[in-house]
Amino acid sequence: MDDNFKRIEEKIEKLADKVESTNDRLSSIDKTVAVYNEQLKIHIEGTVQNREALKLLQNQIKLEVEPIKKHVNMVEGALKLLGLIGMIITIILGVIKIFS
Image 1 (tube, rainbow, N blue to C red):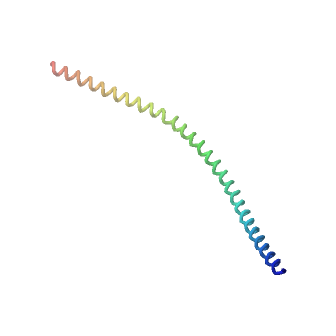
Image 2 (image 1 turned 45 degrees about the vertical axis):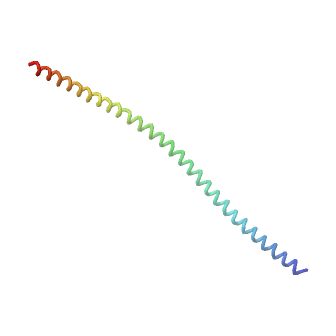
Image 3 (image 1 turned 135 degrees about the vertical axis):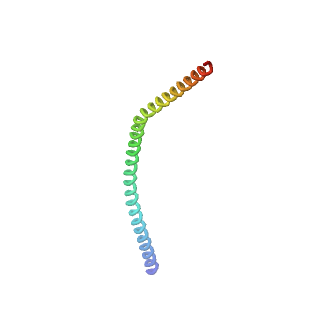
């Protein structure tokens, strides 16, 4: 009967060792997850800051590009007007040449 108790005690000790080993691994995993959570918080904060900076840059670009667009439209209008004036002058000179 002593042999049976010894075997049972040995098995209980092996199980206790396995439980302790598993607890150590779980503790290590918990520490790793805690580190990853902190890194994720930092990443999320950086992402939020980057989005805000991007919005500011987009607004700044809009403010800087708007006058350029207006200028381009004005120059296009002036060129169209010059083209129209050139066509009118050409037509007038053609009519004058025909009748002279």
